[in-house]
Amino acid sequence: MVKVAVIEGDGIGPEVVKATLQVLEELKKRYSLPLEFTFVEAGDRAKEKYGDPLPKESYQKILESDAILKGPVGETAADVIVRLRRELDLYSNIRPAKTLPGVPALKEDIDIVIVRENIEDLYIGAEYILPPTSVGQRVAIGTRLTSERETRRIAKVAAEYAKMRKNKVTIIHKANVMRVTCGLFREVAREVLEKEGVEVDEMYVDAAAMELVRNPHRFDVMLTPNVFGDILSDLAAQVVGSLGLAPSANVGDERALFEPVHGAAFDIAGKGIANPIATMLASAMMLEWLEMKKGMENGRKAAEDLRKAIEKALTDGKKTKDLGGELGTFEFTEEVIKRL
Ligand code: ATP
Ligand code: MG
Image (cartoon, rainbow, N blue to C red; front, side, top):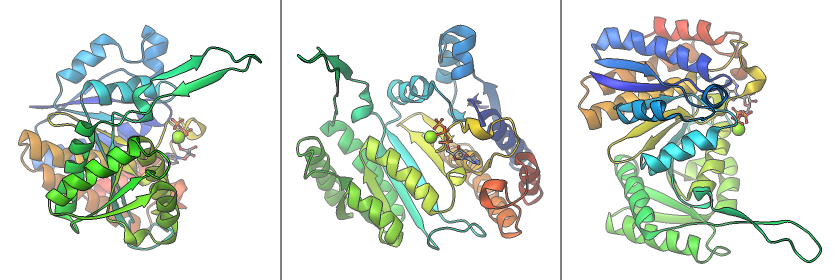
């Protein structure tokens, strides 16, 4: 059996995860996938219930699983996802931004992969309040970490993706201002990529944000430090149509966690209108990874089938409200299942 730990999450999380599981159950039958799902409590509701957003028992179940499928977590997001990334050594975050048929986007035919460093940078949680100044003003300080080891590891991942695509990587940084941290990132990343025989290009993060809107076709694989990647991937998601479409994979050498890029979206939670595509596409990435890393047969085929079914549904005008359609979460899910 292939064990998948499922974290439903908060807000629209339980809805989009349930919709995705319905599709996965269908794929499981069709492709004889040996998937076994175990629900794991984590997030805001786990904190209310147990006083801990990631209780020991949940963490244990996660350790025993082959892969993790996760919905968005609300207030306690950092306690769950940032901790899991670090503790499970999920050092790369893969965020594809691809236009889909029938979905209006800023520009047509965009196909970008953002490879984001996932455990360092300003997200290490080293934030402090300094002693008050003489006039009693509070001052906080945050520390940014960039190591040669992590930069090497993430640059290798970017190189692997580049080789499957156009053999080109754009390194995103701000080395003109953060000369030491971004300076190291840029230098080490460039060295790794050049050694791997990949064409290297680089851009300041502010210019990259502008270019994503003005001329997104100039990008193929973007390699970014943690925080820049976080911001640019929300931007890229909207450039291709909607935050509700963007999947992500948090991947280490042995473990991986798959989740939508979007957050808990409390404003539309419980209404049955959330778009489940981001979570469904994240589950497609999971199926592929399970074949690649855990030898699960038919993982790639099932993922391909799921993507095609989503694209067909969209082409036929079956859409949720965020895409200008009328369907609810589960009505749309039925349309996808019909097209598998
Ligand atoms: P968080 O604080 O957890 O990041 P958020 O309130 O910032 O959550 P996001 O999920 O990041 O919300 O998204 C911002 C807005 O985009 C939401 O308010 C919601 O209206 C919309 N949105 C996000 N995800 C979806 C989705 N799957 N389907 C439809 N609309 C969505
Ligand atoms: Mg958000």
